Amino acid sequence: MERQTTAAAGGRQGRVLVVDDVAIVRKSISLTLTSAGYDVVTAEDGEQAIKLLGELEDPPTIDAILCDLRMPKMNGAEAVTYFRREYPIVPVVVLTAYPDVELAVSLMRQGVLDFLVKPVLQDELLTVVKRAVDQKAMRKDPVAS
Amino acid sequence: MEALLPNNETTRLHPGRTGTEEALRESEERFRSVVETAPDAIVLADHWGHIISWNKAAQRLFGYTTKEVLGRPLTLLMPARYRDAHQRGVERLRTTGESRVIGKTMELHGLRKDGSEFPLELSLSTWKAKAGTFYSGIIRDITERKQLQDQLIQTEKLATLGTLVSGMAHEVNNPVQGILGMAELILDEQDPAKVREYTLDIVNFSKHIAEIVHDCAGYARSNIREKEAALDLRERLTEAIKMVRRCPHFGHVEIVTQFQPVPPFLARRVEIDQVFVNLLSNAVQAMKGSGRLVLTTQNGGETMVVRISDTGCGIPEALIHKIFDPFFTTKDPGKGTGLGLSVTRHIVAKYGGTIGVQSEEGKGTTFTIQFPTANRMKEVHDGEADDCCGGRAAGACFGGG
Image (cartoon, rainbow over all chains, first blue to last red; front, side, top):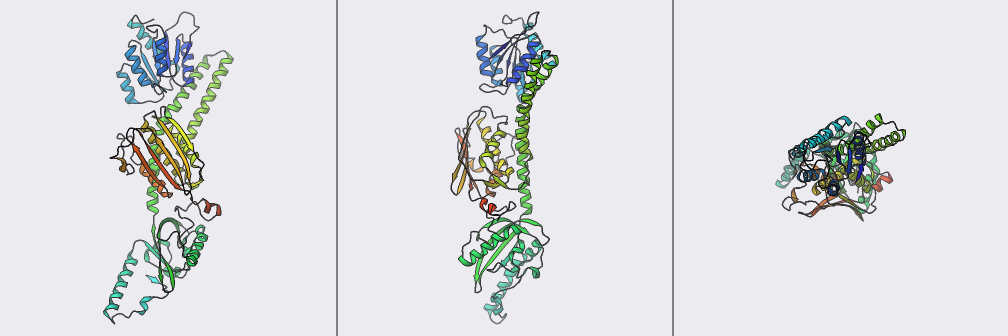
């Protein structure tokens, strides 16, 4: 579990939870998001992500979750189901290396905001994350930071 | 059927003299008709291994006229690599009466008059007459059958590759995501130390992708026409594991290897890989992402044993006798050809082996393969057999033992 905070002046853009079992994916996405002004917390799998959310403020100040699907311990599909049930106002974006149309449809029905297939370009990633964070802000929920 | 008969009993028959002789003559004519019209080649040889008779099918198959072969050694009809072993077998049978191949059916290669080879199936028997022991060989050209079998193996290999490639997407796209991300970060990075760090990440993960592609390409490139080679079954199992790790359903399967040293096994790599990849990917799919896969090799003296056990869903008792049938599958439509286990059994049998299965629903399945240890490696080292010899009884060719 890692935390990277942007040093960018002018305040943070929001806090994003990145869940992915591949270290270089976590690293590159974290660097990209922090460079763009986001706070980033990371987890290696669904189990660790749930634990992390439990350890954060109650309710956790997370503006978007970026989640891989194929991971050890608890896979992404199970984790997404958990996120949608426990934190319904937090937008979830799936980022997977294994495109599966049936699974994508099933996850979108659960309310996943977007389904990105790796490799994804920096611009596309930032656009989708911004949309997710904006959606959370528009909900004006007390959980929102 | 033209023949050089050593002591032809028919010469003593005088047609029409008695009813018995007439009956015998008719019986012999019927026999000759059957032999002459048989679609398989029939070749008879004396105890020295010289051809004394053959039928029209043999003439068509080998391309010689009857006159050209009568009295000639059987070695005329076989590739040079079989000849020494054949001669020793003939000698052994003549002097000791021992033979390892009489009464058996073997797959070998024949040699036509024009010098071309073809795969054949040979059933060999002996018979005795006053002049001694004679050989009868019934020979079937199996060129078409071998081509169909090869095509079937290739088809199944492509289906397996399809599954593995979809798994590879995950393996490759993850590091590509990292590489792409790092490259884009470098574009805006001013700090030379960070540029160096990100570049090293790119180098490392590019190497990782190269390894994945190399593993998969090795399997994809393996050619059905490649020659037999001495294989280490443990090494082939290890390579097969690398492949099935890329399966989309591999998940968190734990792999345990219990490898005892086993002798080298003479076979085509593509076929043995197909056997192991089929069995391992079935096991992984049965475990649905979690469980224990135990791979064992044992040297059992005359046989070497490969055992693949999973803790998956098991096979219902009502279906277990069907699993080796072609086109039988329990997978969803479009997710399996139903040829995997059929092809697996065919390949194992081709190398003189057997495959068995034990399964308990809800607990798991164990496939046990037994290959003969005396897998012609000795003959290979002695230069007596050749990798083109498809039969497990090579070195014991026509008339040999």
